[in-house]
Length: 380
Image 1 (cartoon, rainbow, N blue to C red):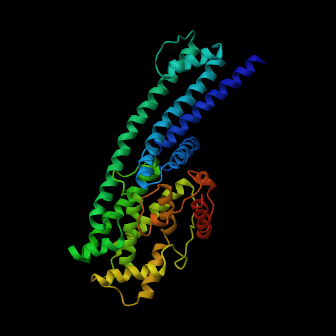
Image 2: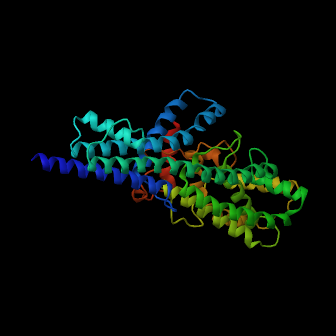
Image 3: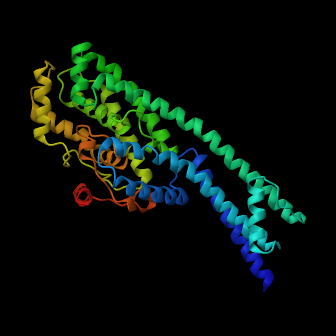
């Protein structure tokens, strides 16, 4: 009976170690999005703690400073969690091969993982386990060291475009300011050079922000900036260009919109957050007709040429916007983006229990239900 118990404990310990290694590989090495349970658990727990801290932060600049630490803390907590799990798994294996009492098994496991060497081994089996645990411990540290430069390179490339947008679209950025300023300075034909650059930016965004998921919560260096707000501004500017401006049709604007909403949808899909995946051109959007008309009046007042049929322009604009309306607002709420027109000023705040859910748990929730959730959360 004692041998059976030790075999079971050894198998359980080894399984726990392999499960932890799988979590680390799927989180840091696998070149595709994969929502890992252990990563999700750690992120949810830390997110709740940060939300508790936000109860004492009323002004946005203070809230922004608090949330600036969320992603770095979460990123550094993960390796510690993995190392702790590996230590427990090897503790069980050392106990199963005869290291007694349990405290001594834990002592030997910690010594081996951190390559300290102060706990001696007494036979070949213990030596093999100690060497394998030391190798895993060094590998975890090397993995984190290699991971950080890749992440900060992607962050720098993302933020360069976000900062440049402030030059073109103001702070907070808006699609109206972007189009108006372009019209005053260089002419609307210059927009044809802008869309391909942002199309590439959206492609890189989808690739990096679904494989290096902590990038989603890395905040911009300046309080008033956000990659979510920048994405919304560019998408709205492209949608207005394609639907409302009286200029030759530019297919690059259409492709920019498509690459943008596909990128935002992929990021939301990773978190398993609900949105309408089968939206129709005539589905309701958060931008009202009155807001659209006000934008048209503002553009016309500065000399921007508009199409004659504003009713059709509204239908075309809504047909573009419906593809990214909900996901943009979800990401604005998730990242607590600074307020900007037509994006974070109507952000959807979802409950923490939905944060980083498994993608297999995602189900369709109508925009009306999302509005009910937002109203309920705003009442807290």
